[in-house]
Length: 86
Image 1 (tube, helix red, strand yellow):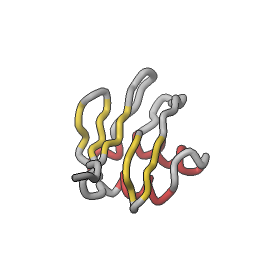
Image 2: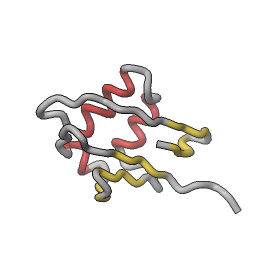
Image 3: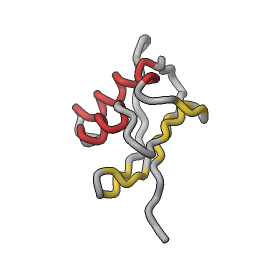
Image 4: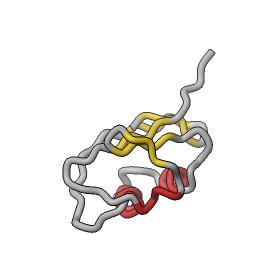
């Protein structure tokens, strides 16, 4: 993930184990509690912050409705934000 959130650049590329029954919300909160993702960023993603796009295996998820999307081994998540520029 590479994004501008709350005025700062956030970069994250990681692999994570998921357990049976894990949901998108569970994974994001775990990344926050482990310090791999700032808790403010987790909240912004889960609440469907403006301009954020969440892709699950290439398919766009509508946040916050999709926070309960089930995850499985081998899934790929992408969090995209509009990039600033001119």
